[in-house]
Amino acid sequence: MSEPNRTPGDETQPDATTRPDQPATGPSSASETELRQQLEDTRAKCQTYLDLAQRAQADFVNYKRRVEQERSDYARSARAESILKALPTLDDLERAVASLPASLAGSDWAQGIVLIERKLHAVIESEGAKPIEAVGKPFDPWQQEALAHEPSTQFPAGTVSRVYRTGYSLDGRVIRPAQVVVSSGPPDERGQAPAQQAGDESKQTGGAA
Image (cartoon, rainbow, N blue to C red; front, side, top):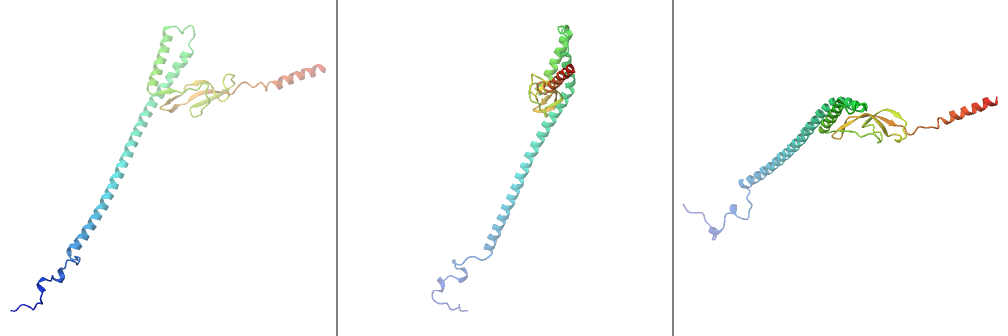
């Protein structure tokens, strides 16, 4: 069989379907597009997992802080409960020491009571409790409980003149308010002047009659 007729130069001319200046539109192009799509999907999934991991880490940190805070609050409550149980005994000892007769203050048993009172004070303060200072300071309803008002020439009105029961705070929080007497200021003598004046006038009237 004879070969098909070729024009001169056909041997050097490339086939039209394989010219290099034409873009590839075959299976390789479709595969590249698919890989790019898979890469984008993978990146989106990685970002989602990273967000979830960061959120889980933040939740764990917050949970750890909350547990530590609850543990601290529980320990403080336990200490406060123990201190409150011992305070009535300390109150009794303080009253006993304050009411010791001068003739018995030097006896051994009286000094023993004083020593016990001091030791109990030290134990309570070692647990973090501090007495609330009140005498001479303005009345604070958040720290003190007013039992009565009394005239006073030493303390201005609205300040604490006497403490009936010592208050205590623990870590800056009041666990027992102080029971106090609040000064109402100097005695008002103006209320007595009209009465005295009326008495003088009645005497003068009676004398004139």
